[in-house]
Each structure stands twice: as structure tokens, then as C-alpha cells.
Image (cartoon, rainbow, N blue to C red; front, side, top):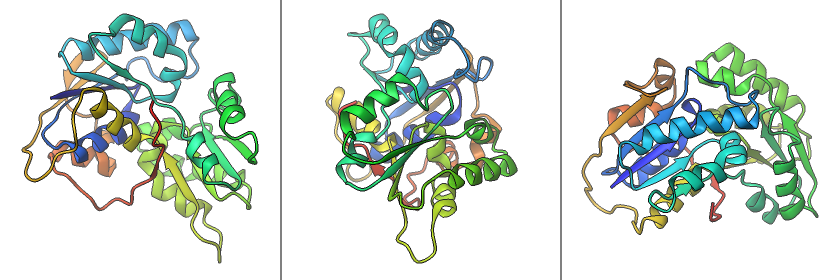
Length: 273
């Protein structure tokens, strides 16, 4: 079994690690676009063109399924990707976990890139699934870029700024960018209020990994399933994981080929994506 994942940068690490934990024997293909990122400021047409190129680089390795591990690409390019690749290659998009956060009740926030915050797509999700719940959209300028560079000081500044914009009454945070899942514990610590229970964080990595397996009729592994391979494609070139990936547990897990369980899981979206 071979699973491909695509993103502009290393945001795909979270979903890739989730696949690895479910199926250690899966061969993984990670295709990203460091030469063309960030994708957010690009026009939808430019973004779609680059996403198609990245997807086709992954498809050349003949995977069984492709995960679009990027909220921005899912918003703008998913229809084009499916038109180009399906039905031969199933394509799984990434949708911010607004629905399960709303279902659990209570006010929550959505941390996302400035390009996604206030977008018709995100507003549509909130209107459809959280019309009766108080939702605050929190733009996080510079946070995804800081995570991409593994710039600890820039991450700390961006997280602190977003935490300041997060209302005290919020009970949960939806992580509306896949990069943010790589620093989930730092976000959790930044928004913690003295004397109050920890805020719930809603990510998508576990949900899209499970959905990818379902789409191709596979189940999570039991027992000793062996160890799959890892192929990394950077703007069309087959290379190693970029150095910044080693700053995160997900990157180290993938490179080492081990199935770690030391990281506290996020609450899963649980939706069909």
C-alpha cells in the first residue's frame, strides 16, 4: 500500500505521521513545493497550477491514494485535483474541524492563516455547522511561515499574538492550518488560563489519515506490520526531508520509521473529508 501526501511545505508532516501510526507498513510519498511557497498569497489560478504540479509529481510514484494535507489547497484546488486525478487516484481533502468543535458546544475559535480567515469557504463552514455557537476567527500572520522554518522565536511571537486575540471564554481551538498541528502543545500552553481546564484542540491529521485508508479499503494495522518506505519530493526533486522537519516529532518519526505514541493526540474531526 502506498499513500501520497501533498502540501506547499512541511504542514503535511502531521497527516503523514498519522498514516504512519495507523499503518507502519505503508509506503509514503511526500510531495511539497518549497520553491513556490507560500501558496496563500497567490491567486487561486496560480495556486491551483502549482498544486496540480505537486500532485502530479506524487502521482508519478503510483500511490493508491493522495491526501491534500493543506487547507488552502483544499479550498482552492481540490475540484481541479479531483478532475485531473480521479477516479484512478482517490483524492482526500482537508477540512477545518469546525463541525465537531461546534457539536461539542461552547464558544470556540478558529486559528487560520490570514488568507483563510474570513474567506467565503471558512465562513460557509461556520454558517453551516456552527450557526448557534459563538465562533471567533483568529488570523495568525506569520505563524505558518515560522513553523515552516522551525524559527522558535518567530513561532513564540506569532502564537503569543494569536493567544492574545483568543477570547477568555473560548473552550476550544480549531487549528485551521496543517502547520499548526506541529506545534499543538505550544499552542495549548499559550492559551491556558490559570485555574481553568485545558482548551481542546481540534486538528484534522487523524481524520484524513483514517479516511484515506477507508477510501482504499484498508484497515489500521495490528501486530507487527513491518516498516514502509519514505519518498520525499521537493518541487519535483527527490530529496531528503528538509532540515526544519527534524525540529518536530512528526518529522523525526517519519525519518526514523518508528511508530511513536508519546504525543498527546488532538481531537479528530471525524468527518468524511
